[in-house]
Structure formats: structure tokens, C-alpha cells
Amino acid sequence: FCTSLDLLISQQSLTFDFVRSRILDEELKKKSSVNNVNSVNNVKQEANAFSVFKFQCYNCGKYGHKRSECRVKKKNTRQTPGTHQSYKPGKPKANYVAELAEVNAVADVSTHEFNDLKSTTEESSISFLLCTEEKTANVLKNDIGNCVEFVIDSGASDHFVNDMKYFNGGYITLKNPIPVVTANDGIKLIATKVGTVVTECFTIQNVLFVKGMKSNLLSVKRIERKGLKVTFEDGQVVVSKGERIVFQMTSFGKMYMAKFKLKNVDCAAHKACTTNEQNVLWHRRLGHPCDGKLGHLQKEGYIDSVQQKQRDILCETCIKGKQSRLPFKENLVKTHRVLELIHTDLCGPITPTTHDGKKYILTFIDDFTHFTMVYLLEGKNEVPKFVMEYVKMVHAKFNTKISRIRCDNGMEFNNNILQNY
Image (tube, rainbow, N blue to C red):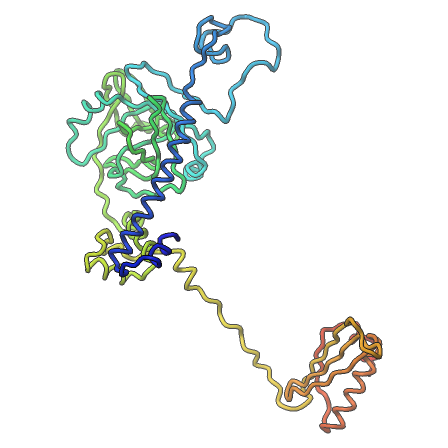
């Protein structure tokens, strides 16, 4: 961490305000460097995405597109099998077309994370329309109270909102934000969160938050997938389930808009779902202190973003750091006399050999007294001989018999000679 090196070589006295300012400056540097890299990549993508084809179409004779992209009905010309340029799955295209006076952009979005969240198997591309700024101003100028206004879009594959205040049912932050590239002057939009909008008549789940959108969108595809029926007739769109009408929208120009009153949601589940990102950020900046330390710093006026009711932070790093392994169970079996338990093992062959050709070492250790005997052997076949010699020697020395001999059950111990002995 480069800031720690600057602090060590700095001649200033270390105070909390000084350390906090250095940490914030370092974070701003990192964010600015990431944004510069992303802007360079976006410029390269725009140059490739919006380049104009300058040659003539072989189908209609017009300039600006290829024969494979031509919307005019193909002529009855002979075509060699396999030469037709088919649609490539890796390059999604817009599936909604409207008049330029009404539509301002068409966008495609794809992400593996949001597909897993929706638990669906359809394509991940998202196509939707955005209203112009003038029409949006006319629609929203009469907005009063705690309401949310939606534009229903038959070309959108997901629901969208442009303000997080509509997530009264909770939300989560996407680990990998979804980039949204529009065809309107190369505008870049990013979907960073997904949540739930709870109105007084229904609940909308899996709604994407896209900052910078001019209007909120309701997807006809998502509505029908929930078992509802969407009908467009007489300048209105009616959403119903069986004989019951859920809601209806009136047309505004050539678009359908409706305003719904948000439901006041104030429950423990909603508070638990709402993440306090500022608390977690300061917890990491200050070296993972306890909750009491954050509260003390807030009282002293050093930080002002920590909420008193949500100071309890579930930090994965802190949990792993406090984990400890249980102690091993003590061996309660202990010996109480000499030769009650003998440990024996054979080691070898050892190189170089001794001057008289010994290559193996045979050890005997008494568990009670730790009395140890070592024998040098030329081969494994001598093990039974020295085992019997050791048994006779300790029996004569301690005037008692061996109760148990513990070994690794090698073939040098597990043989007919010792078993018969």
C-alpha cells in the first residue's frame, strides 16, 4: 500500500485527520486511473461500432449497407450454399424499430450475473426505447406525491428505473455492473443495482437501476411471463389476469404511460436488505475496527456517514481472521509401569554404510521411562533376532515382562518367526 510508505517517510506528525486525507486522496487517484482506462476503451469501441459502410448494396443498389444487412426483399438470384452471412450470436442487435421523432436510442445489454439472478434461459440482450428530453419534461412536470411513472415498452426485455428512491422493496449491488451502449451519440449507461418496486396495487421484481435514463420502463415480455395478459386497444394498454384488470395505461403521443403510488415499506426485512455501503467502506479504510470505535469517531466528529442503527457490519475478512482451530484431543491412555508399552521401528537402508557393513537401525523406546535401545543391522532379516534379544535383556534388567509392542506392522515385524515367539 503506497500510502503507508508516504506516511513513514513523512516528517509531519501522524494525526487522524492527516491519515484520513491521505487515504481519501489515494482512493481518488485509483478511481481516476480506472476511469481513464475505461474512456480509452469506450472510444475504440465507438469507432468500431458506428463506422459507416461506404460501398453499394448488391440487392437494392443503395449505399451505406451490405446485401446481408439489406431490409429490402431479396432478389431471386442464385446463391451458393454456405455463402450467406448469417447472424452471429456474439453480436446482438436491436429488435425494436420506431420513428426517429419518437425514439432516441436502442441499446443491448448482456451479463451472466443478471441472468443467474433472473433464473431464466432466454437470451440476455435488452432492447428498449428512450424518450426525448422534451417529452420527458412534459410527462414528469405534473408528478406529485410519492409516485413512480412508467412507460410500457414491448421491445424491452427487462424493467428499468432511473432513480434508486423507487426501490422501496430493497435492492442489491451488482458485482459486475451491466454496460448499456446506446446508439444516440454513443451515450454510455450503466446498470449497477437490481431491486424491487412495491406499489399499492402490485410488486415489480428484478428491476434494473440505470442512472441517466430519461424515463422508467416496464417490459411487456416480463409482464406476460408472470402470467398476465397485455392488450393494446383504443389508445390504451390493459394489463389483466383472467377477468381482473391489474392496471391500464393511457397513450401519450405514441407511447403508453401510467403513474403508480409507491407503498410505504418500513419493516425489518427491508432494512436488512438495504446495504450500508458507507459503513463498510469506512470499516475497511480504518483497518477493520470494531463497531464501538466507529461510533466513537462519529461522536468526535471525524466521520459523519456512519449510521447509528446500522453500525453492525458483517465483515467476511474479520470473521476469517478471528477463526481458530480447536485444540487436539489429549491422549488419555498413559502407561503406569516399566515395559507396559514399547515403541519400535526400523530405519534404513542408510548410505553410506558403517565400516562393518551395517545399513539399518532398529530402535526400542519404553513409553514409561523413555529408556531407549538402538541396534545396527546388516539386513531386515535380522529384526526377529534382535527383537528376541531385546525382550530377554529388559526382562532380566527390570524383572518384569513386556505387555505390548507398538510398531508400523511392517513385514520385518509381521512374520511367522515373531508371531510364533
